[in-house]
Length: 74
Image (cartoon, rainbow, N blue to C red):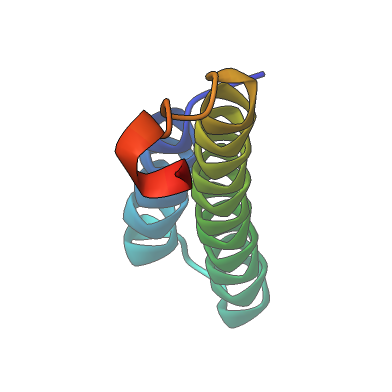
């Protein structure tokens, strides 16, 4: 899967093209495409952050619990 930075690069390219286009309709389409690329980048970052949290939770759950001191049990 692509990186969020690649999606943002596509969005930037669409905005650059929108600045140079001759027609309002074409400009609107390119700006909508840029918005879509930005949304994809944000969603990608959200999914990666969620995956990182899940990986951390899984690692913590698989660690053995700390030993309980015998004095505390007695």
